[in-house]
Image (cartoon, rainbow, N blue to C red; front, top):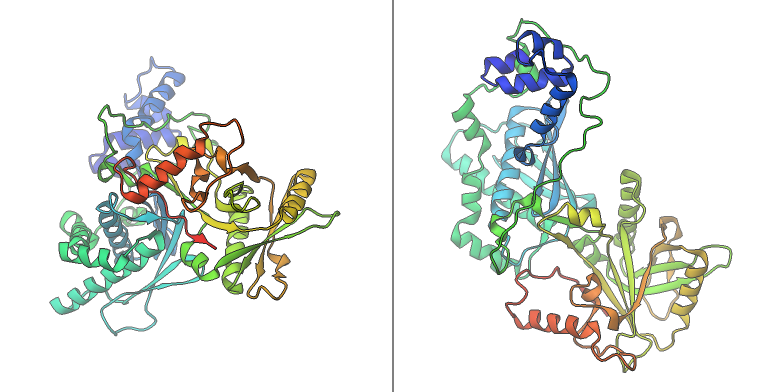
Length: 492
């Protein structure tokens, strides 16, 4: 591989690869590494090289195309999109076209009322079972919000009409994917307007990877290592290092753009990767589940139980199984944040609000110069007595943890059915009075202009007043808040 690179004019890439493989002697023999330089000095140079600002525009890991499938990754308005495709040129070009068009289209929507709500989206590309048929692709939402796209086995089109039909089907697929990434109020009006402006068509016209590759690399491009090896009979350079050369190297922190200009940030100039979505809420799934109750259970021998009452059992179970799968996949244990705001309304002193969202760490905030976007679900509990909540909180403080489970609750006249086999253990629980919630507090999504929070005597300027003022300004369309808040659907 190193000599193939130099044959293409990538001399510096060859030098870097030889060093990474451990062939420092070769570099010295060829005069690329001066004899007078110590190994430490050479390594320091390589560290400076790898920490150049341009590193932020390079993928952290190459895709070698050496397996049956390949996974392409992209950050689209803060959502991590993983697209798995069969390892053949036609499918790979289609996969890259879908991602490029999706990025191009949503890049024009950063200043629109488009609210990303999913942290990660899986897309799977597969060929049709049989040859022939319509020259179109189909997109279907499957389990866990993943999108499965079926494409024709032959993507070479014999006529202009066939290619136009294929292009229209790609646009429809992008629309399906888009709604699995973001919530869009008045979606039909929004899409009609974009259609009139030609945004969809332009996004696809500039993203047809097959045409770009053919015009740049010819009709038989070499995109994998095996393609190049077929015509290479020169010396080979085996890996000589037992550890990666940079296993003990601290990488430089990503550079953050700074600006002295006042006013709202220019979101359209901000790269997709500058922002990040942290979410445990799949909006379509939660809409289907309809969370409308909280149920408490206590056993002195066990942690207390907090059950979320859903109308749709299947959707409620899918929510919890998604959380459990994430725990097993990532080994995270505290990614669901549960908060309870008490004293939310003077006329109803025992009413409280429950907020379910994502736990946002300081590291995640620091790594996202464009901001971290979260999605929450809010439930207002209009209790006439504090007994149930107080009993649960007393048990939680005694044990230091609680069990969260789904429950089926469809009739107030019948007891709920707790689905204990789908449990999720929690240790963190935020409980605070509503009057302490400030203007930029993440729990401000749990406040409502319909309520009058209880303010203790002697508190003349509670933080909640500023928070409610900001909510009122957003509702009235004040320019003070240039970035729209993430939607937080309320449930009565």
